[in-house]
Each structure stands twice: as C-alpha cells, then as structure tokens.
Length: 183
Image 1 (tube, rainbow, N blue to C red):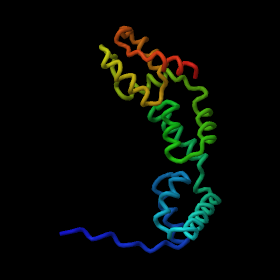
Image 2 (cartoon, rainbow, N blue to C red):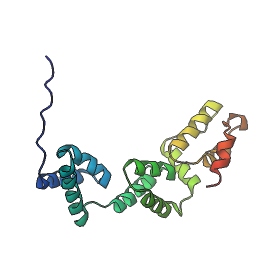
Image 3 (cartoon, helix red, strand yellow):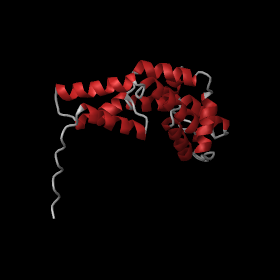
Image 4 (cartoon, rainbow, N blue to C red):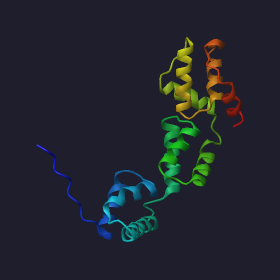
C-alpha cells in the first residue's frame, strides 16, 4: 500500500500566522531566525509571504514576545550554570540558533568574565562522571570531551597534568596548545 502524498496546506493569513507563532513561542523560547524558519513553510512563496512573516515578527518584537538579546542571555546562563559548558560551546550553539555575532560576543563576555575556565571544566568533568585517565587512549578521550564541552586545549592540559597523568600518556598537540594559550 503506497503512501499518499502530503496534502498541500493553505497559506496562513497574518492573524493565523501570528497565532501559530505565539503557540510556538509558548512551547519554548526561540530566536528570530528560528521562528522565521518555522513560519516560512506556512506562507506562500515570494514577497507576500515574506512581508507577512516580517509583520508578525515586528508585532511579536513590539509585544516583547521575541527578543534575541534576552534569549542569548538566558540560554548562555542555562548552558553555563546547568550544563557547565565552556565559552566556545555556548558560542557555537548561539551561532547555530541564528544570533548575531556582536550580540553573542557581548553576552558571552558578560557571562564568562568572572568565571574560572579551569574550575568550570572540572565541574563539567564531574557532571560527566569522568575518571582520571590511566593511559594515552583515556587521556585523549578526556581531552576530546573537554574540547567538545567548549574548553581550550590549554585548560585540558592543565587538568590532565594536575591529575598527575604520566606525560607520555597526554596526547601532544603542541601547535594547537600554543595557539590556545593566548586566549
């Protein structure tokens, strides 16, 4: 039994589009770019659809339902305090969500100015229940885990050395370490 092709939806009017957008924002906080991507398939293609989306976005901004700066601040605090992620990871996440570069920079600078990256990395490893590595393979795994968490290679080396991991078990990435230590 073959599947039927999906029914073509009627494009939403501006009022229906607004209701849809409010419902989407009611489920979770979104950026302007995310909401725009969500609304795009619900309008006709071309300038009329774009104009309808822009009108809805303007109305939502005016009513303070949509605010990228507030989203960036809230999201950064959540990822820093809850997930214990480093600055780089949060920066990548915000870029992926469509936040502008200048806003990302100011938000992250404010959030991470008084944070000790090494202690945050230790909290991240505690949260992940990571144990002290005993060989080179495990050391490399811990390093990858820290880099994935948004921490610099310099911090990863400091943590591994503070765990008294044998120097030969620490993977060497000299060129990258020297470029990371300047941050």
